[in-house]
Image (cartoon, rainbow, N blue to C red):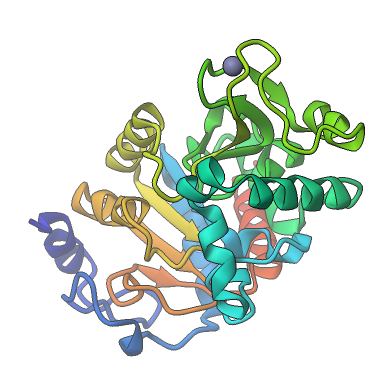
Length: 293
Ligand SMILES: [Zn+2]
């Protein structure tokens, strides 16, 4: 195991850009390396520019600047209100009509506040236009990568999408706004018009399996990449948390940027500053500038 980490240590004995790489595959978050290593951006940009395959993984931290709160961060939805976490369980959705009504009502109320991609999303779309992005794996369900201009075919939504609603029985699928219109018209616990089954946002709730095809695609992308960029994710939730390890074992460079320490900080080739709306555009701009001519 971890042959890739061993070879990485051999290839980069002193770490890169002054950051030591320690032979601890999954160190405690308490051992996190210092943040704010903005000086590494130039170096990381050359890795992105020179790699044939770059894979990016994004988590909730990617969208906080778009006004979407994360779940487990210091100001996260579940940190502030632990009871809210249970509402993300499939059992609750299946068995508590009152909770479903509450959630539909809240969605309807928030429907007008459509979040917009932030500068980090926009920069990742530019990275794709530069031909430097192979696959974008996201834990987010907000659809903002596609809104920013990333090709939907390159985006692997590992936890599904809240842009669509599907029937839990027959799989019939509709855009979220169409179902919210029904809620607005008084259908406060909407069911499938085709089979009468229960409708639910097309996201993966606790207690539901991840889609094996999406998971496989993410795994294959990690195996085949030369640079793996993990942005705004705590890398604490399995199986997504295994993807950087898979990439490392396959010999890729790992770059991490997250507000909180991650278990990978000490084996990453670079830990970037955590302000994604600053650091991601800066990174992509350097890729663009050094690719031209
Ligand atoms: Zn149905």
